[in-house]
Structures are given as C-alpha cells and as structure tokens.
Image (cartoon, rainbow, N blue to C red; front, side, top):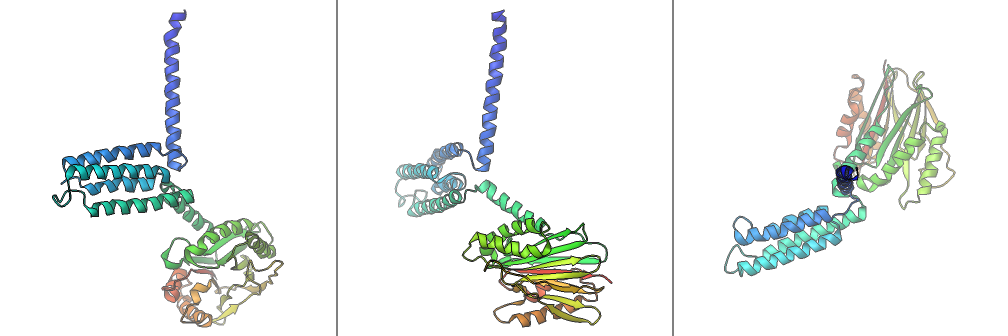
Amino acid sequence: MARGSSPDSFSARQRKAAHRVRTALRRSAVDYFRGDGSDRFALAGLLLTVPALVWGTVTNPVWCSPVALVLPIVAGGLLLRPASLLGLYAAAAAGLIVESTVLGPYTESAASVTPGTVLTVAACGFFGLLIAQFRARVGVPWRRGGTMLFDLRERIRVQSALPRLPKGWHREMALRPAGGQSFSGDFVVAARTGGGRTLEVVLTDVSGKGMDAASRALLLSGAFGGLLGSLPPHAFLPAANGYLLRQDWDEGFATSVHLVLDLDSGDYELLSAGHLPALQYHAGSGRWEERAAEGPLLGVYDGAQFDPLKGSLRPGDVLMLFTDGLVEASDRDIAEGIDRLTGEAERYVATGFDGAAWHLIEAVAKDVNDDRALLLLSRRT
C-alpha cells in the first residue's frame, strides 16, 4: 500500500511546488508593477542586451551602431533603481571598450566608436540616473505615476462637479488652470444638504498658482469636501480656517466663498473669507450688483469670524462666483476686470446663460497666466 501511494504523494508534491512557484511569480510581478518588488529581473534582462548589442555592432556595425547601447540605458532609467543602474552603466562602459578594441581607431573607420558616441551614451546615462533618483525620492514608479495622476485628476473633477438641481435652476462651472496644466490652485466643492432643499457651494482660491498651489489645493479640496454638509453652514469657514492653520504652511493662506442657497425660495447666504464679491444680475432692473460679504483670509489667524450676507434670487436672476484670476491682470485692476466680465455676461441674458461659463473665461481672461474659475447659478423664469 505504501508503494501504491508513493506516485500520488509525488504528484501532489509536484502540484504544490508548481502552485508555490506560480504564486511567487504572480506576487513578484504585481509588486514590481506597483514599484514595491525587486528590480533584479529587469536588471538581468537589460544586462543580457548589452553583450547582444556589442556582438551585433562587432559583426555588423552598419546595421547595429555603437550608439545603440543607449537603448538599455534609457530603459534602465525608467525601470531600475539608482544602485542597479550603476551596474548597468558599468556593463555598457565595458561594451564600449570591447567595441572600440575590436573595431579599431575611429580615424580608420566611420563605424568605430567615436568620441561623439561616448558622449551620447554618457549623456543618456546621466539623464537616466537623474530620472531614477527622482523616482526613488518620490517613491512613485514610472509604471504607476502617470496612471495615479490621471486617476487623481479624474477624482478631483468628480468631486468638483455640481450636483443636479431641481427644475427651474441652471448651474455651470468652468475652471482653467494656469499654463494649460491639469491641476489648479482653484477648486470647487458642492453638496445638496437639508434633505436636498439646500445647495451649498464653496469656491476656494489657494495662494500661488498652477502646480505650485496644486498640491495644497488637492489636500484642501478633500478636507473641505468632508466638512461640507457635515457642519452647520455658519461653522464651515471657521472649521476650514482652523484646518488650514494646523497645516503650518509657509504660504498657507487661501480665499474662499461659501454659498448657502435655498432651492425652494431662492433665498441665500453668502459667507466670504477674503474672497472677491459675487455678482448678481437682477432681472427686474436689468442691472448687475456686487455682493460682498465680510471675512478675513483663511489660514491667517485663529478665531476669525465670518459674517453672512443675505440675498435672494428671483426668477430670471443670475449669481456669479469667480476667482481673482478671471478679473485681475497686470495691465488692469479688479474693478476694470469686473466691468469687463459683466459686459461680456450681458450677451447671455437673453439665452439664459447656457454654456456661458467657459465662454466668459475665454472672452475675459483667455491669455491670463493664472488659475481661473467661474461658477454660475441662474433661476429660470
């Protein structure tokens, strides 16, 4: 019976061993893709390409140039850690020495290793090492870095999306970062609270612009999104101010405006933290009015108070919230920029402001090198 069970035991052990190997390979592949695993397999593969390229250059230098050694060096800059990259560079340098020895002096043959070849390979190695050191310092592998940033950008867009409003209301939001980048120091968080009867919107402008302010804006947008709707409206800006103070940033202030709108009556409260005034279009008089609430900048001092400004949107009225990049420029002051914005907005009164937000940014501040954001709410007649 013992002999009869031996083949079964052997095959079972083989299956278990094969399963362990598959599991280990799969785990290693996943870890490597995430940037957590060893790079020895990539290093081994790239080291094997060096003698293959050297052999190709020695046997047929017309089709395989000595400068082809930059290929594993460039790939190594994307795949390897700095310590492993130095080993690859040593192999490439040895390959260049072998090619130079076999092919002879460059003065006798155009296909030999020239000083230009050495400089090209060395320059690619230098930049590859810089890339590898940057990846090691940031801790994000190139295989995941772009995907992570793309996913982060899409999450920010979803978080900044305005909720659907009941019939009789129209809302638009447009945001354009400085320099055509994907991340901005301006952001919007919004939510319907009070059982859906109230719309709360917060438009924030973080100090700085473009990528300099984007990292702080990313952190604040997540924090503000969590605070919005979790606190009474009058407690939001004090809580946001305390959060910003606790970060202890060197350049940590921000301006913000908080709109609390009753979707049944049209009544609203506007709370401002050093932000520009809102603009309200009164359909009855056909005039624009600046609506400025009082309050200090966020992140300047503790215990700040923010006094609400009350108003109402009647049928046909429009309310615009915007950041300073839309109305302020080096060649004009804020008052002139607001006048230009209201003048352009007059064109959309008859059409109900459909698609107006983006076009207003294009018309008023298309070439301004600053983050620009515009939020528009209108009550239909």
